[in-house]
Length: 456
Ligand SMILES: [Zn+2]
Image 1 (cartoon, rainbow, N blue to C red):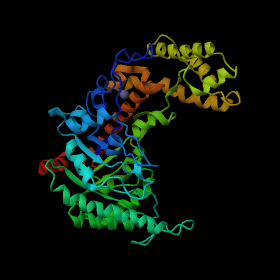
Image 2: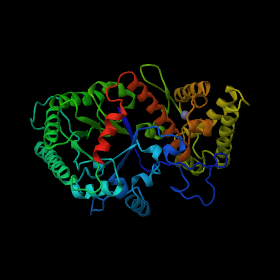
Image 3: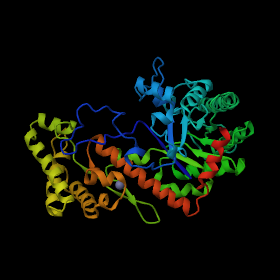
Image 4: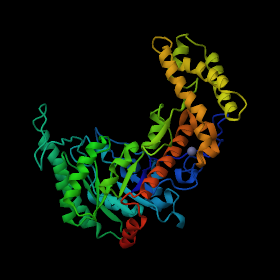
């Protein structure tokens, strides 16, 4: 199974000064920064997925989705191609897949997608993508108990079934036009037909139709937040309706902990940003390490927010609960103790003392000024003790941990959090490769890349 990283300009400043918490003067983001494959010194994935929505956005009255790329960046991608833009225009990266999709979530509230199949075809062709997904329209609802094409029912919305079927029809019609017109493109890429559905049967029917149209690579959409057993039910039914040789991509697979649960469904590829997002959003499980056979092991990261920037702390200073000088002193004390601990200069008791003193301020309720409960503090202390005891950043030989050491385990602003996300992605990729070696079905690179050469 291949793993594509859904990139959203996730680069870091390689010269970031952690001690002074700043970049060098004159740094130009993108030009001076490093993408994940650059900072880690090798790609921790089999390719990138780039969504049109984040490159160009859409601008419609009452429903705009601003692009994440600046105008200059999107122009560069379209003019020079996605490989040049991502700086993988080097023969050593020739094996990396570059898949494009619409980013259908960005327009899920609209009645119809804001792009035509032709717009997407031009985007993929101009960008030099190796693979491109048809224009789909997300269906979030899913009822596993419906049979065949039985309509979705919602007691609160009598028209729900019709509206959902409309999205299914739009996705199918677009796929048909997309495939037909893809054959006229001067820069060919492998087209993927996107499956949307509200039930196992409607997804299977969509897949069956896409194969009949001529697709041999399908992408299952709308399941980014679904539980793994729901994805399994859908995959099971889809696989019954299509031949084994048809490749299947899972768009936006978030349950990275349960990747082995979908290994038996002949899934060719997935894309995810989950290991990166966890670094930012899940403080308790924000640092991945290889676990035993059953999964990854997770550590917390040590939350040391910037005393002068953190909204909660600023409010507490304004209310007179703490003075700013006191917080800055605690913050500095905690950071210094962590670095000294990493270098073996202080013991566990000293570092925990400094870190927990600042944690008590950080965890103070900004509205009421109430200190955190004893049980909350002891829960956090246990998590930090485990992290500091095991020193996973020392045990990991990824380039992030080698270069940033304990800074990667500190939850604080983008340069540390993104580095931890890169480390997590590296750990996840290694785990996936282990599964593939153990007999995952689509572990072979040759299968996918033979397709690319066919397209050329
Ligand atoms: Zn690492």
